Image (cartoon, rainbow, N blue to C red; front, side, top):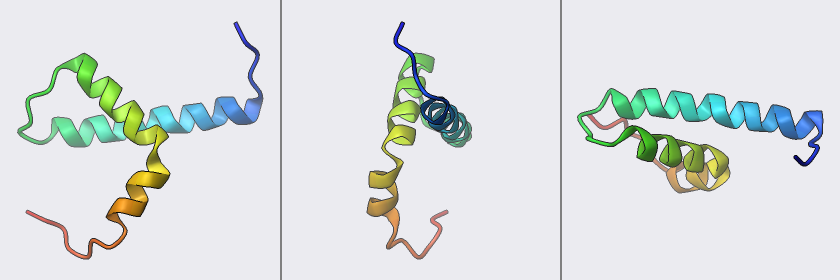
Length: 64
């Protein structure tokens, strides 16, 4: 197992926390998605947060 720094471990913990929040949001919708796919999707989105923020930054309205 490769050693990681405390900074890297903390960053990974923050990504997992964000993924859990994304999973809660998605589960509150009417989307049908399997548990494994939901986990993979939310971890991907959390670890690519900078790109997601860039894509969504111009949204001014919350959609119903």
